[in-house]
Image 1 (cartoon, rainbow, N blue to C red):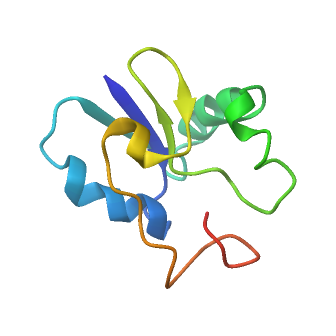
Image 2 (image 1 turned 120 degrees about the vertical axis):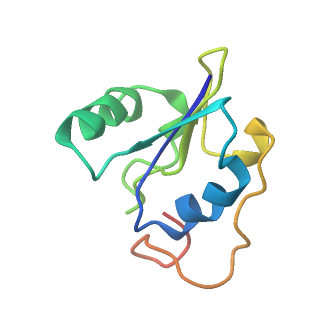
Length: 98
């Protein structure tokens, strides 16, 4: 199963929703819904090299995708999904993603 950590208020995350709707290969975890979900995400974010460039930039690092083999990625294409175009709304402080 592929796990996607995100939030309902993140435009990059909500862009993926229609692509995975009804697809049992995917599990979504809303990190804003419950502190347990946030802690599950932070356990990954705090140590995984996929976040090396994200930490300290004003970005949360979502959507965060944990592939079936356990590899962590911030690129939806690695899970066969189409990332949101880089135009429009962003939730990072510099306006360039989430």
